[in-house]
Image (cartoon, rainbow, N blue to C red; front, side, top):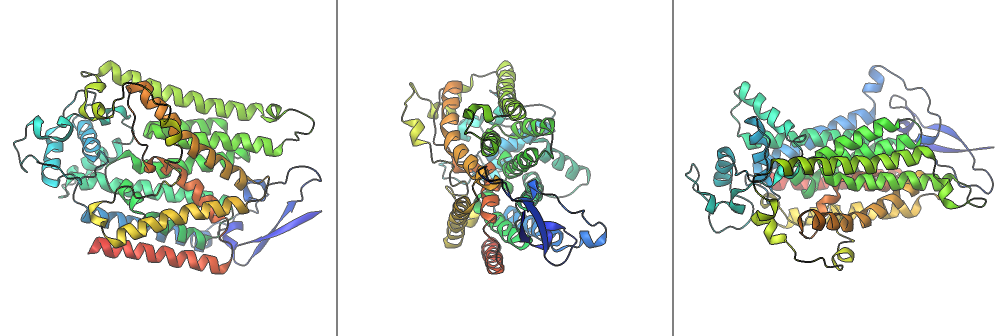
Length: 487
């Protein structure tokens, strides 16, 4: 006995027309419901050639990617100040690489960084700045001009450094900070590509994907991350890649070694990627429980050796990358990181257990615009930011509630919720243990969960009316931000 579901042409084959039907084995009586996502069903052979390349899905992805690059360019042009989210420190890291060095604790901003701070200023009220063009003394620089981005590995920063070097070789007359920022458009394009594949795993129609993508790129939080110099730009891409691999690994279409390799790369881009690795680990374990018959054996026997190896590998990778880089930077330091003014402000004499429950909800709304950049201040920027933040959360909740028991969507929803609640207390403990500091976890640290949230939410956008609505809203939000940046 088989049951059937109808799906859009793109969900069956990017190059086909008309609606296809896929046969899915019906669940066995008394057992957990089987997953109805494409990851668990036989796919028909894909067509190749020009027809596939010109399919609506591919064309929509190309258009959305081009529009995202255009909005990043507008943001770079309109936002001349440096972001308050430590952009001077990230710029200084790039400048160090351009001079052939890796920064360490105790390093003071290089001259090109000081020039950028003095001439662009920082998007935060300050009493004084060094004069544009110099000279500058360390006393008038924020944080005494002491570098703090040394805590990150150089992996992300090699991209902006390479872009500046290429621009110099080609004698392109563009400010170096703007060149560095432009690499964020590439990270956003990579993120959209992985998310497009993730949406396809869940049979989200291509029109709904386009609308959700436009909503995403119009978010002031996403623009701040992908149109300034910061390794936050890697969050969406890393989150989408890990989530996609978790689905394909679960369907035995990706190896454990590939998943672990991607995890290591993601952690080297930014250690807060630990969040999405927690989500992927919980997803894998929940899928084991969904498939197991727990009426005859205890729950802990549901976990396969393969799943334990993957989850254990994620844990080992996180520890090795985190501790390894920490040991490396401590060995090179010329100044105790605890003596840096920015760290001193966050220092705590003793641990307060209330920090843990107080941090639980910090990354539940990762697109919340906690700080609105000067280029988007006003009704349009704040309104669009708030609407997109609420829309993404609401869609994720609706998708989770409507997901079928035993499905991969239900597992993803459970894993996303667990990770969002568990990560802030874990990070709070890590910060206190490593540096004796405590600070409010910013919502943007949850960017790696956004692909999973949009994947869950996308599953409810099946009808033609809902697809039209999400595209219309996405275009409206995108246009509003573009007009504001042009103004």
